[in-house]
Image (tube, rainbow, N blue to C red; front, side, top):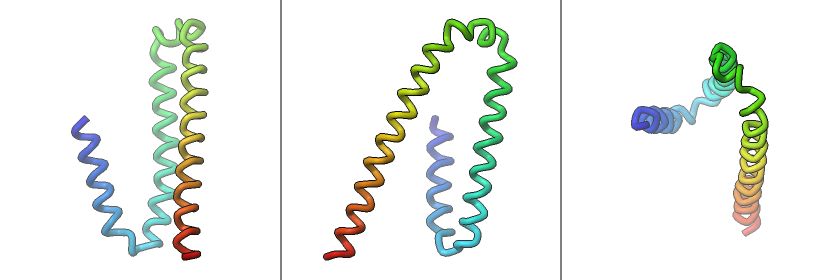
Length: 96
């Protein structure tokens, strides 16, 4: 867990120093999307190759679907609240 936190902090520091390079940021954003796709592919291969998971899909499938739906709804809701909060703050700053 400490490794994950340190890598995240390193990324934040690096992002802070690279923020004045918009062309590089654009390339990094596209790269991030592809890395996420590749990560999802590898996760799918890992799940598909695990015979215990595949043999119990009927048992864990419904529970996994419920968990996925609740997670997605929570993420969308919190993202929407954060979006409204950020842009309401920006509008108030621009008006005043």
